[in-house]
Image (cartoon, rainbow, N blue to C red; front, side, top):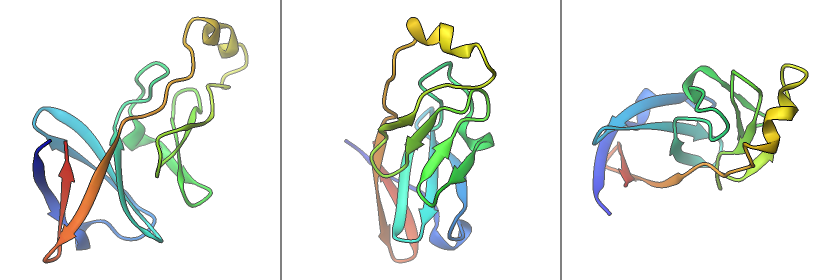
Length: 115
């Protein structure tokens, strides 16, 4: 595992997220009320860009394509793809899969992620 500096903590206000490129990997960093978290930036359903999604219920990321929803803190699936109507038929072959998560630390006002 390698410790990468990604940005200043002031760059991500509470309730916001930021996409960061880390060693050719797209990571999404979130600032929730209880701290900073990071996940892989692609939905595990059909690889939708989560940075274009939205944070819901104070701790979940919802994919903009098919509304799969993941717990930001753990990466676990909260709700699998359900939009548009009929997408559930694809879910027979695209089984639920959690997002990869990464540890985020704050050091001297800067955010670091371990990959």
